[in-house]
Length: 217
Image 1 (cartoon, rainbow, N blue to C red):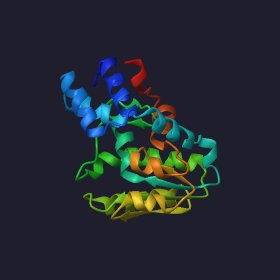
Image 2: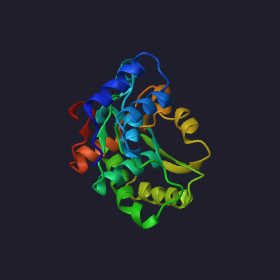
Image 3: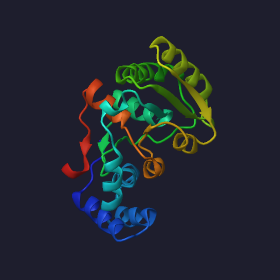
């Protein structure tokens, strides 16, 4: 588990609220409190200026809004977060209301390790009853085509209208399709109209895991 001093979170939020660039602000706070890589990553992924956090929170919709909507899913983003929680790694409720882990994106993936989380993800989507769902997977990640194929089979099994495809730029593809986007990616979150925290929903309702809150540090 990654622990942070409350002062580090407050100091970073103070700097971001005053327009300091995120990379240099995180480095400054990290150096001041002698933080390790995981602690700095948690700051980078979890702490945001008040206006940004508020703006993203206004875009978040509940599970009831997914019913009858077109849902676009950031495949690896959701997969990594759910997988981390299933492995017992910590997940965090961030300033913007989105739940994130600290795994990051890996260059390759073991197909055996993703079957269970993929099953949980697709079965949860089926329960939410969207009109249509599309999973977008980053083409540059090893075995992304194989994983997309597995998701297509699961979609058919659960009688879901939709598909799973690999694309060079998931961010661009996500923003160009769907009524609601499921991701915790900050770039997409800033530009999306509506957000659904699918990974967070699964973690809290299916896995019964309570995310750690930065406000409770």
